[in-house]
Length: 176
Image 1: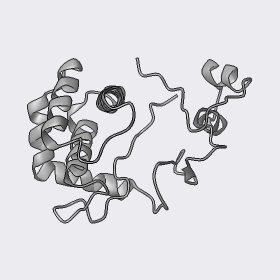
Image 2 (image 1 turned 90 degrees about the vertical axis):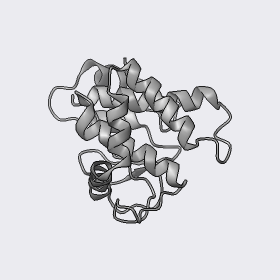
Image 3 (image 1 turned 45 degrees about the horizontal axis):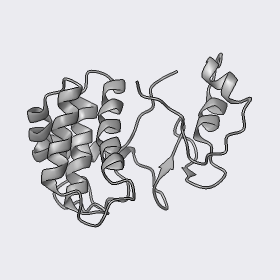
Image 4 (image 1 turned 180 degrees about the vertical axis):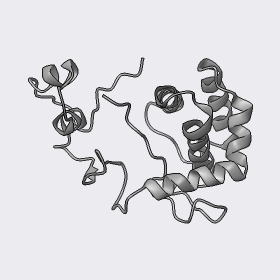
């Protein structure tokens, strides 16, 4: 089974260049450009990139368990967390930061826009470029991925499909 690809564009408007406006402001654009630099250039594998995403997002969730107050994730805080996560994963934090701040990050961010289908809101998931699946009470991401899997299903799918999950929009993906 392949490692899933996460595309970072969300509800941003623009072409990925300097005129791009992110839903949650300029810091969100910087975060997504940093993710794009990690994904396309500085992470040695897709799994390392996912671990980088997980580290940043998990830090936010642990730091702000009630949700992010407006304006909480400023550029300084984001840069600090990215540096910690990059160091943990042996990624070059300075190169990631330079990439995100420069033309290269802009070009890589534009690639994310090109991969993003027209959508009605976030979060959403597509599997194998199929229909958009929106977060709702019936969505079971793990089951959807397993149903779309072709070939011999891995044990994670055969065992999981025997269960009925009480969780909506829960992937049960563990990044170890």
